[in-house]
Image 1 (cartoon, chains in turn brown, orange):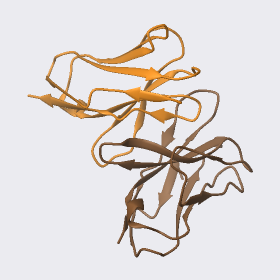
Image 2: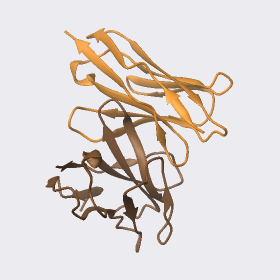
Image 3: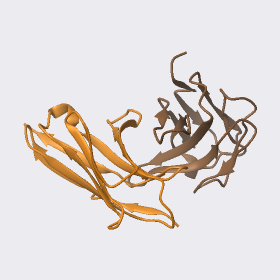
Image 4: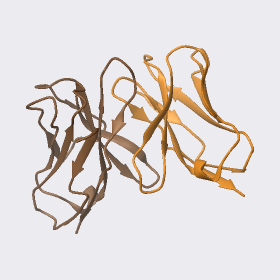
Length: 112
Length: 106
């Protein structure tokens, strides 16, 4: 693994279903983030984690949950998907010492 | 709260210089970053300003004026591959601007 990986690449999901988007980094970065990107709205922060064992809410946390059991993994869960959660989801990490974020390739999620 | 504003679109020709502006409102300050995103791709880091002044990285430069709550990204010697969206971003937990779509014409 080099950098940040996300899985799946894309997914079509029925409304009401539960879905977990996976994110793994191998850079030993303390901080990790989940964003959603919608046309015309830029990137909006969903949840973040400044270090393993801690998480925080971003701008648009409703309907999403995260966990940070270890440094490398930061999964995002949609407990009961709704069509408004159709978006491209990006995971990112940073070492905290600089303000550079490294982004994963993204997951394109469609909720029908 | 925190918010950033950018122009939605900018168009320029190959070889030209273009400036993308970013204004922000925030209760504190942790630096201003710039990211590039090509269609279908992930954002990639370009530049960061913690202090006032100009930071230069090859053809790209970024400027910050904290007293004016204003920054810009300067792209020189534009190439077709520079056609992309550019985002300014602020803060330790990263608030992003809405993005500026740059189109470079031949």
